[in-house]
Image 1 (cartoon, helix red, strand yellow):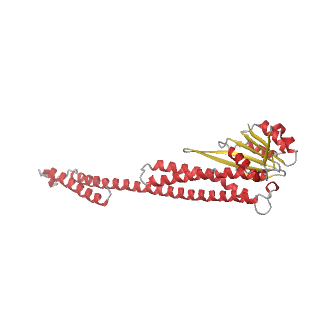
Image 2 (cartoon, one colour):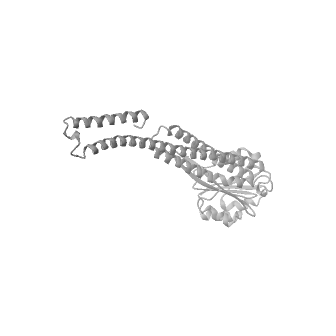
Image 3 (cartoon, one colour):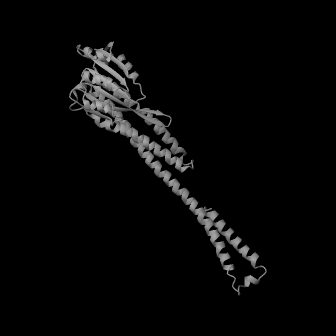
Length: 321
């Protein structure tokens, strides 16, 4: 579905265009076209592939589901894949933004993405002195906005992890704690997989040889790269915290099991002592004086009860019961 197709010249909007009229605007000197599609159909993308001379392999990646983020350079254009996070309650959703960048065009294709990115176009149009740099600035504005979407998600994940750490020592449901920790670990891995490849990809866009499409805009992509590195550092810290929390939770489980085992051992010792006495007095030998003593039975009960009470007090004092 077509969202926008706008022609710009020297940083200012010239006209809205249809997909079929893009070619005639590209033939006019100084123009560049910014096309935005959402969940593009194959016929729409094939029209633009022909007009922008897009590489077949890059076009195929758009339709192959969620791809690994990357920055690829083809003969006449750059192809960038970014993932955009959306956090709703406890659910993390990742959408994909595919960006084709040529010398006089930018094509962005959002696939299963909840983020509209309409604010990026509005921001660019408010800055004609930057928009006059053309496709390089548009790529920067899009990538900067998408990378910035990760900051609130990472912050929310960090806050939830801190809350869990606070209640973990008071919540006795160790299984629930472990499930939440592994849920955090899964989310942090998803975010990390979306960001880690971009550190290498965006490092190609500044310093040394850079693609012709973004020549002169290297400093802007260095800024995006710095944000990516900061997010990766935050995620590494979160992953370390999760690993530590998992070990602590396992230790708490072991301590709880130890407490249970001590209680079982204490009560077991008391029952064993009673069993020993009953075993001895239950043998019924002929020459056992207690068998014919009228106080034998009360005495046996008293000895068993007294011994049991003595062991109970000792175990209670030791914290085993």
